Length: 242
Image (cartoon, rainbow, N blue to C red; front, side, top):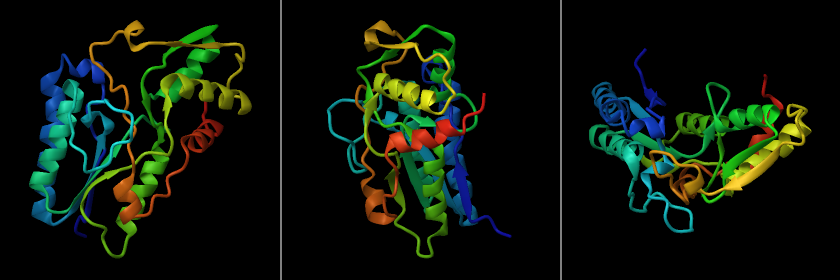
């Protein structure tokens, strides 16, 4: 059977390490998506390429829509933006899905890291001056399935796909603590979640201060059925295994 869909979830996502591994980040985030797009065009397949909120600079205080100008900061953001361009220039049929603060069942993620940290330590310190939208990978996968299963294809192009609402990493962690306790996963109920500024948590890369996305194209093309981030988080934590 012929290949009809190619879903590219691969990326160099180590934001800080990307600053010193520019060549590898470029190969994985920019060059590879372009090559995938070229192959897709040759075999008449449709590409679904996963991108990120990091293509924006993190300024302002209102959610970004798909038609807004991008302005990436840092190697990770720049290479992901280049990847979007490579896909759009080399494939005729493509969907670029920008998501943010993603966590899922496999691999490391912020939710699992914080649950473990809170179980082992009397206190944790979390950045409180960066705002965005936590997104459960299962919800992103549901959107991908909807795109694929549509009898009449939705317009090709860029779509924002995040869960609904916005929060800071600090408030996100406090909700993780609350739900972790409710689910019986978090035994150390007395762990204190302290806020800190980005300056107190230095890193090689500047993080976007505000990176909320609005799923405008999704609302118009597929139907925005994404859940509130707190509801998605509850499902995730209820099924976390140690």
